[in-house]
Length: 147
Image (cartoon, rainbow, N blue to C red):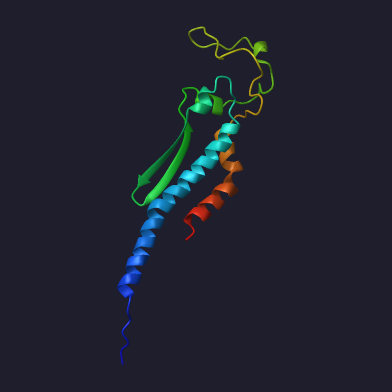
């Protein structure tokens, strides 16, 4: 004795639509939200003199097959040098350090006012931004991918 089941095709179509939504919009939104959280935290630790570095922040999404990945970075020419700095001059006045200059003899700083890395700047600001927001990122990804 066989039983006819109705609605199998409709259920399959709805399941396919749900999976497409998760793979499409929801994943992209989750990655974008994570990048925004990490970028905002990193921006709080960037040393500011002219705001060029903080204003050069970018977020990028990449689609490789079915995989979605994101990247936060800074496009200013000197971003890597500031990120990788030792931080040994943190809190020292810029006017006290006269030995820094570029190859063409200009000063390496926009101004000699204020202190290095003040008020809240830190070396490795992007790495620290990722580690400080790990729980927030996990929570937002879980929220965005929920049904």
